[in-house]
Image (cartoon, rainbow, N blue to C red; front, side, top):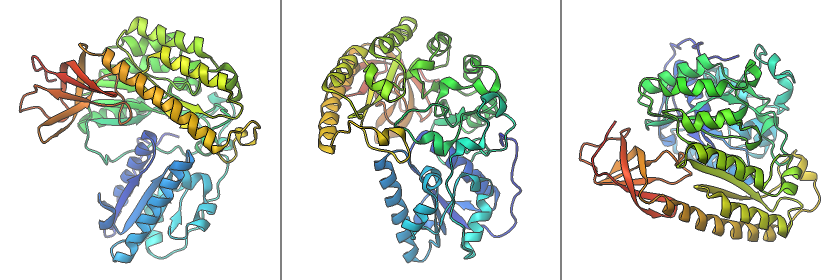
Length: 475
């Protein structure tokens, strides 16, 4: 099933230009780089600016309503380029395309094709066909969970294609790169449609993950960001649910890699051994990206999730007992059907006690085909907006306080930007893009992107930190 070792034949026909536009999460970034690799191997020349491309491929996000709108707007903007003479075709791929297929094609005639995941292995051929004026049959969505056996152990030899499990071509030169552990999800959260269009859980073999890690290190990557829909399930379909605990030390010793970060942990599946591996393995960031979603037991049960405030606080305490400076982040849904004022208080009380470094707050919205779409007890939009505003304000106050608590801490910062005299990067407790950053003061003129620098925290601004280098230490 994993295609990492398989390379498509190099095309000999004249190169045409293509631009990849990626929306959504880090998993989509990996998928885009696989598409880029296939396109380059198929004779296409990749360009960064869509205005310079004959074909624009938009890797869409279809998770929540705002992401869907952003995807449609991006496709329309790309379609507008066709009037300038250079761009000939706009193609939608990704989660929105997989999820809605022919419906999206009908409602968005500006896109020349809407391709599902199964078109990825022949993406170069598909694009050449589109450029030749051949009509593409719109993708017909289906529940991708039906493509694989119910029993995880029987999935290893199943023929279903998994996006992002093949060879890649980097589209970003930064020192951090996402690395896929797995695709799909076996959980049945009542608010989430992802399993239906991403499919059942499929782990990548450790040898393939390690091979890609070595390749990324050779491309200048210093931090590996392990991604999946649920990293705590890694290995269950390969016969070893503790496979991640043994894989982490191997990844951390890959030559050139300075930091490994795990994301997307399900609290109910986060085993003591995994906590220890993340908290105590040299080279692994003591960073816990825990998908709590709420803290009220009643709301969590309606979400078909497990746990409560007490259990979650216990998990955080367990992590901090082994790594006192560990980073912790989570996302929360407010305004879920049936959520009472008391449930909201429970959530807010939990946030106060949890001392999280980063908090994402989202208002509930119905998602097509989910169980929660049919629930009673729905709140109106104004009420949900009010609750989001209230919890967001609290979250911002609490995460700013948590950043202040880190004053005088020693942090190791991965430098990601050096511009106009400002050196900026991320400490171990700061995940990519969403958890804030650290500005370094007192660094020498020779500092470069990709350096790892030890510094002392001397200030904060919201979730962002300022750290001063007393004795410059670059690794």
